[in-house]
Image 1: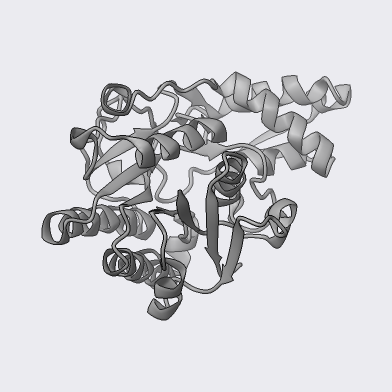
Image 2: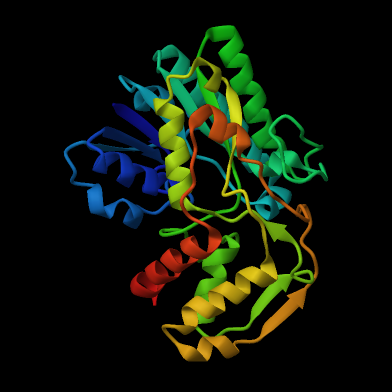
Length: 321
């Protein structure tokens, strides 16, 4: 297969590039390096089946160049982060909506077989029911959540109107190797890992009882592969929760991180925890039902939060410690 991975220099995108190259496929990466990193691609920049296109999804000509001759699109490029979208909704919309529409249009015109895209658990918004079931959502709680819901609406219209097969993967708090611990909008797990390794006290937003369905990167890779390889006609033109199907509080998370990191440095067990205010736009609790993915895609996630954190902590210690 020839696969285009947008945002391929990012955390999830670079893991997808690495995986599909290891399976013998041809991979094209489109990235503007606004949040992704060249070092995430360094291991395969010279690979004969890897092509890097430096470009921006906000420019339709870049999208058209990237999709030439590809079989499948794995669209990961986006501006993540709820706080960033609250601070700068215009840029978030420009990348996540205009860029998404550009990629859909380019994929349609290039006659790609299927367009698989990163959707988000933020789409559930103020829906209070747990676990989250794909067909029941609430009102969005942030500009970011709005953009990710608009992606789903556009994908559905392109499926119905133009016959482009689409699958949306609603990611739930993905973590793992290559996730960036630096920057104002770093995800909580790599940020906490780096602070603990440096013996810096952690600040948890709120009382630490907000809960998340933390999802290890290898489960996400499995879902992306299933999404492009499924031959089940009932499995396309829809969205799926991409998660492990279990939830843990932030307090639980910090406990696991301290436990696993203490195996490398016992002093980490004594790093103090501080509690700050809740963060604007945050959903209190998040837990995915993965029944739909199991039924239609034969999804079978292998990594629990404990299994994934052990792998992730080892990677951070060896690469950034």
